Length: 136
Image 1 (spheres, helix red, strand yellow):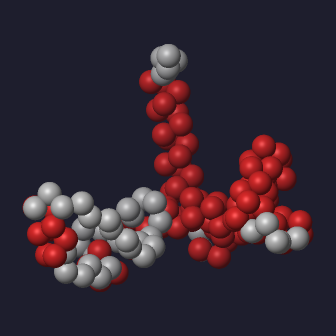
Image 2: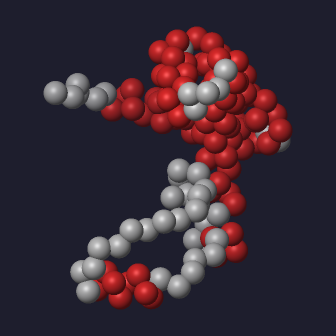
């Protein structure tokens, strides 16, 4: 059963997150990436459980890789995740909006797919990477 949430705690977390987003919005992107990399490195080194899970998953996917390569990819993945979360996801709303999204995305014809769906035909969608999580 979920614990009852505190409106005050929720509000304080919201204010802190908005403040952090605003601060990041004022800094140059290069500095934001440096900060995100520092936080990622701290998280990577201090969170053994997540690091072990990353190692295990990479080893399963690439059993012939050396331990050094596994660690390198795990560390790079952590940096990439924090860069997306701390920099790109904050900036995306300034770049892509209801008015500007068409300049940044191309959507092909969906008519054949819609016809299949209208006939209740099973369809599998395969797409390329569309952007970070918040954009989707």
